[in-house]
Length: 414
Image 1 (cartoon, one colour):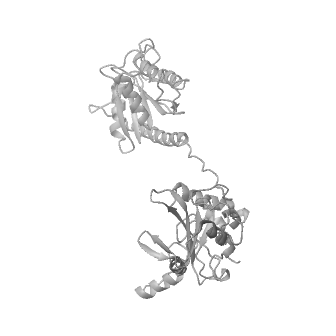
Image 2 (cartoon, rainbow, N blue to C red):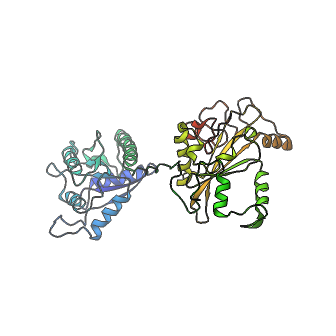
Image 3 (tube, rainbow, N blue to C red):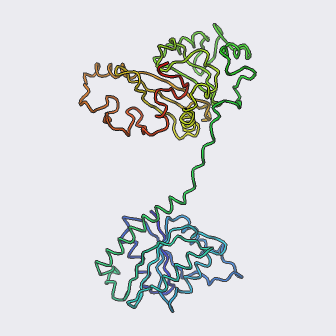
């Protein structure tokens, strides 16, 4: 945490300067504090605008970059010094670095009454419109009889006073954290996903009904798509369409592709729907994602897509435990991006991890230990807060999909 300390006196010697220097060196493990002097600050005069002078801009930039401010004020004629008042005037004339900035007031005085009246006045000034500081409420540090309070090393002598000051600074640190969190700009709300794919992107095949059972055949004819023994040039290979199909169908997992327009375009048709971990049927290809999911799951589907589209997550993984104790099925939702990093869709890949786990244990001779240990992540099996594969929270919206595949929406018990 970075704080700025402002000495409220321009005198050559000031106990308030000693107080801020004591705070900076004694509590440096809790925060970093730079002490600023008001010695060279010109008297405020709006007819002679000094806003852009190096002296005023130094305060402006330092305060803007700081998490909070501590002002140590003396008391002159029951109020603050003209020099302190001038710097606050400059900082509320055309620039407003103290606006919504957490500020703590402290003060040292020659007499036993401390600086109670000047602190009260300073609080009123700082809270005035145009200044707008968030002054630390309900706490006052009044160092009376300051000429007797410091030892020869400029440390406060009384342990009780040091303890009280430390407690106040600890509370102020928490206050700064809370205020800055409250004032942090809200994250922009993600735009709702168009699950009905009513828009279009560069690769959208127009003029074909997305809901048609033979969408693949119609779309292929519309664009004169390569097929069969036609060759396709890939990044590092040349394959026929048939070879691509056989290659993708041989993958030891179920693959699904939905584009950035939220249209379900492809799955590797490796098994009949009833034998798949997440059943799909040929007629689903081409459907908008809204058609692939029950309406009650649309909110969860939106959340997954927004996480991937925004870059908040590159992959979301979740175990679907409805396949029985002999399987450990994981659904992975991986963002697909082009060469420039732009989101172009979702690669959902689903596989049963248990054969891999069994093979690993057999090869290494290791065994699972303990009835409460998850064999994949060693997470406690009865821990309701952690997903054993992705460590995703169980309250993560993707979990509400339960037995429904969150991209294709096909029921697991189809």
